[in-house]
Every structure is written in structure tokens, then in C-alpha cells.
Image (cartoon, rainbow, N blue to C red; front, side, top):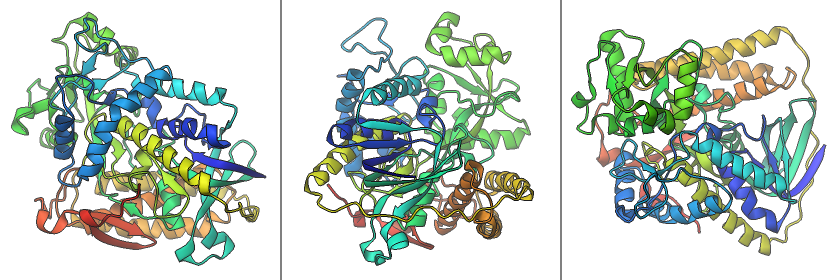
Length: 548
């Protein structure tokens, strides 16, 4: 089945929907999402969105905090652009109906601001502790009401439509014209042909055994872009959130950074505080430091978790400030007003991704990327807390302006592409192969490519992922297409990209900590790690081509 649109958006998080709303007045938009439109990392974001909205704060301070957290790999011009444009984009969200928590005693600004790790000021706007859900709800509502936006649910993207692969155009003239997608309910493959494609598929936390991400976070957009020949950057930098709830009845519930921002204390099982031994900012140190500290404490003590304690705060304040966290923990038998919360680090955020310029344009013509799927240069080697939603809205707006301007001058006709060829057959024996390989990839990534790495562990992981990639290639075209098979194919590619980049970088910086190269080396490694069609190479920060 073929569809023709002006704009194709793959993903239904804040980046994709905010972009869709801003291009919809200029053409027809298709939004495809592999589950339901509300299923995204955005919907799980608790903490908030960082921006300078208080006169006591400054752009310079926010820039400095971001640069410090990024450990030398942030692109200053990008950081300054995003920080300065942030307040304007937040006003747009408010106009769309996003309701941030108001200050109980307004003093200059109407909103309650919180503080999170790595920030020198209170600058996090939030909607209680379900900020992402509040933003997603507003964006989904407006997209449903817009006559030019069509949302296709349960539609799993397979691959991008590129002229080189499907039309025989020389690689140097390659261009993206949309993508193939599987209707997960009917098994029919749809062809989406579009003038401009935005990849906003979110992160890749499910490549690890323990993650705060939803089940859909399998790095689909990054894997598809890599297969299409687009540049991918800085995949070694995987942020592990320090505090994921440790409980047998839940697998990915995040305990927000804001809990530490409001005074939460990390303790060993015996009640001993430990963060002072790792950083002067203690619990408010950048996430990479806190995650490594917890990992080290668990290894020293042999305990399965550590504890986050806010019992010294007023019970009513805790219930009102963190209603989602309180109610979730209470249902699991933990009263956080009276007892500490068991927590462990878990894979949380992909700081690398599809390499883009300042307007979100990739190295492939007509292909854009935004949100967690993109590597913009904002986060560097470690994302500052609550800068992700900020980046998503700023880059969605910039991409929308850029693509609308291009559309006005666009005279190329939409090409025709071949229908999907169904070569797949049913083989019940292969179902166990899919589930086994899923489990093996996630376990090897957790064991060998986690918070602390070594060359020996990385080489083991590389050898095994090469074997798994070959196995998956062998049966991919023989097995009936399913979302599980597509996701397995993608997480294998993502795992390989992460391992290859981690092996390439011979230093420790930000989220990448290697026992064999424990020091940061600015003389040789103040570079991006770039991968493209099997190649891996370094690129000095000053050599990145910037558009817009």
C-alpha cells in the first residue's frame, strides 16, 4: 500500500509531534508510530525542561553548566543557540496548553522551578513529576485536531527509502524519499513516499538489560539511518541514570533527578552516606559521576542496590511534589515518606545518534533527525539533566523552519518506489532464536559495555555481536516480518555501533569510562567519533559542517 505526503515523521515523541505541528500548515503530514501515539520516552520523562526563565539566572550560567557536564565535547555555538532559544519554545508549549506547576508563592515568575544534578541554579520547569506526560498530551491533542496531520499507529518502520538503494542513483547523489513500514496488526508493508522525512524515534535503552526506557526504545531510527548511509556520531556515550527503582515487580520506573534536587540523600544499605567521597556537589554531581559512584558502592559492598532517602522532608510536601513516584512506590509497598527508596543505575539516554547540523539536517539529503535519535552537539560526552526536552523542542522548531523554506523552492517530483517484496516465510523454530538473541544482546551489553568498560570486555562484546549480526542477517529474509524481528535487527546494529565507538576512543571522558584508559586526553581525543557504512573515524570539533 502506497501513501504520498509532503512530510513523513517517524516517531511520536515531543520532537516528532512539535515538528509536525509546525510544518502542517504548509503540507500534508504523516506521523507513523510503532505502538500508540502516546508511547514514547517523552511520556515517561518525569523531571522537566531546563530553561532560563528567572531573572536571578542567566544564559551564561546555563551554558557553563551544560559545557561542564559535557566534558569538553559540547559544541559551544550549539549550546548557546539552544539555551537562548529555549524560553521562546517553552512559550509555544504553554500556548499549546502545557500546564507547568505554578509557584506556591510567586516571586518574579509564576512557575515552580526545581534544581537537578549539574545545575548551578533552579531552572527546571516541571508539571509535578510527570512533565513528559503533560507535554505529550497537549501535542497529541493538537495533532489529532489538525486536518493536515494523519497519525498511523502500530506502524513499525523497516527501512528508509533511498534513491541509491532502490532507484540506482549514485551514492554521492543519494537522497531519502520516505520509508517502508510494517502494519503490525495486519502484516502489510506500507510505502510512505515523502519530500522530507524526520526521524524522531527516540533512544535505544532496550539494548541494555536494565533501562528506564519503555519497550519501544530500540534505536530504530539510528539503525535505519546507518543502513541508509547517514553519518552517526558519538555512540559510545550512553547515559546511565543513577536512580532507577529496584523492585521485582517493576522493570523500568525512574526515580527523577529532582528527588535529589530537592534534598534526597544516597545511602548504603547500612544507612551510611557516600557521595561526599566522590564529588564536592555530592548528590547533585553530574549523572555520570553519581552513576559510577553507585556502581562502585554496589561492587564494594556486594549489595544489590543503594537507597535514596527523602524521609527528612515533610510528608505532605513529598506527596504533593512527587505524586507519581509516591503513588507508584506506595503500590509496591514502599512509603517514601517513611523509608528510603531502593535504586540502581540503568541505561537512560543516548547522547550520540544521527549526526545533524544546526537545523537538524542529516548527511543524507531530505532526511532530518531530532530528539534523542539525533546527535546535535548539545550534550557532548554527558547530557545535563533536563536538557533533552529543551533540545527536542528547539531543534524541532529549527528543522521545521528549514524544511518549510526548502519546500517553497522544491520543484522535484516525488519518485516511484517498488512495492515491498514478501520473501518471508513462517518458521516456528525461529521464534526462539529471536527471543534468545534479544536476551543475549542485552546481557552482553550490560556486562561488557556498561558503566565501566575495559578493552578486554569490549573486544569480547565485539566478537559476539559480529556473530549475532551474521546470524540475524541469515534468517531475516526468511522469517515472517514482526515488530520483534525488526527491533532485534535494530538493537544488534545499535549494539555494534556502541561497541565500535567505545573501542575506538582510547580515553575516559564523561559517560565513557575505560579502565585501560582512565584519564581524559584533550590532546588526542577532543573529537567526535563518527561512523558511516562500516567506517569509524574521528572528527575534530571544529571540522563539523554546520548548516543554517
